[in-house]
Length: 145
Image (tube, helix red, strand yellow):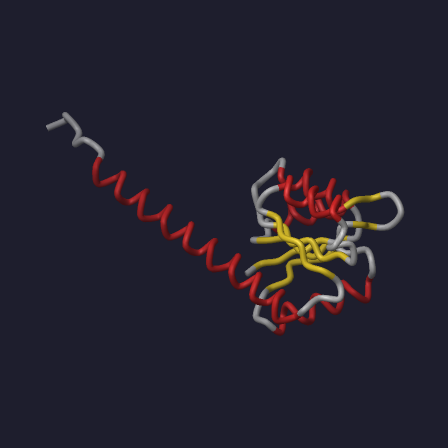
């Protein structure tokens, strides 16, 4: 699965990249701010985004998620030390198609979540393909005979 990482701490971004690549995912790039997250998303069109909730002093992963969602409904996995905070949980629930993982990351749980997202996307793509083929078969024949 193609993943973009949005994390303002360089060492954590590098560790996430190595971990995700070890699991067979392709990290298409990293960003450390709202603006760079949006630019990375537009340039790479990832299958999902792994994002920190807090990006430095002024930027927010939650706002960045809103900007990304205005372009396409892509799964966003928030990795944050604030996963137990009720206000963060409520904001993530309000985004939809978003997931919350605490830091430090439970690697088994995180990998399971990403595999689940990947399987769901494959199923949706397969279902969409079947519907498309079925629709073509059911279209009326041309009257040009």
